[in-house]
Length: 114
Image (tube, rainbow, N blue to C red):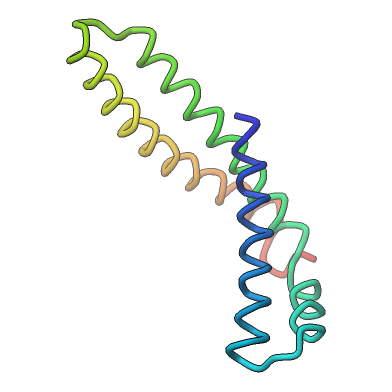
């Protein structure tokens, strides 16, 4: 639950660093220009949405996995079934939650929001 936003923040940092390296070494773009435009075009909305979604997804995954794990029966076979059900249910829940969170954030932060 707590680790999902931290993982997303780490992925954002790695993505920025990788983009920086590609821009400098493969595309011959000035590093200062890259960073200036990254800061210019990154909005608070993007960061808030990403971290909020990660937190919600973490909660969904934890609750669904715990519920499936605590109601498991039939030994090792039941554990396998419960694990599969937890993964499928959590994946669908994240997909549906993503849709509604995106709709909500687009209402709160309409296009062009700075």
